[in-house]
Amino acid sequence: MKKTLKIIMASIIALAMFFSTFQIQKPLDKESKKTSTISFNKQTAEAKGLFPIFKPKPKPKPKPKKKKKTTAQLYNGAKKKGAKVKGRNSTYKYSKKLRNLPTKVKTKYSSRDFYKNGKLETRRYYGKNGDSETDIHYTNHGNNKNHPKVPHRHNWYYKDGKLNPGKGY
Image 1 (tube, rainbow, N blue to C red):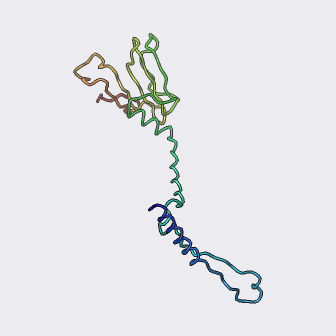
Image 2: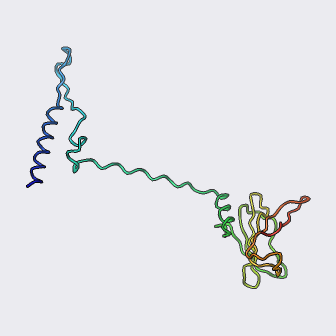
Image 3: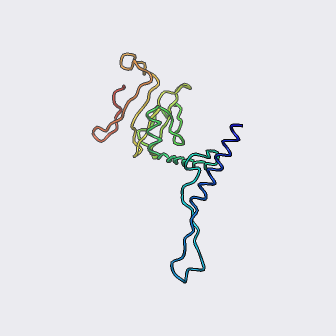
């Protein structure tokens, strides 16, 4: 009973508002007598909150587009985590010919893994120019005193024009 009274009252108020906002503009000159303009005031029942059912749904906010990461950003993220660089990683196995990874490569922003006896021993990261930047060693090189932390990293640096590995940390 109360719901029906509310609906009837709301519809009466809406009709009253509709007729109170209806205006007809009279033409000012003789040429425009043929046409008359009908306009409505912008106030509506929805704006006053009388008909919450008929309120238009708000438009959803557009989702921001994800920016594609550059090769350098992907490389730096992988290097920081100690992970392989996606799509730019190679695997090498220990042999008589190959006893270590190269210090310079053609593929910039890449990584290479070195396996010895089936175990990952070193992951090397190559920077913008293809030079070695960082090594992650997964062994202590048989030297617990100098490398108590496993895995540990070595940053590469130039000395006398040659690349040299730095101390582990």
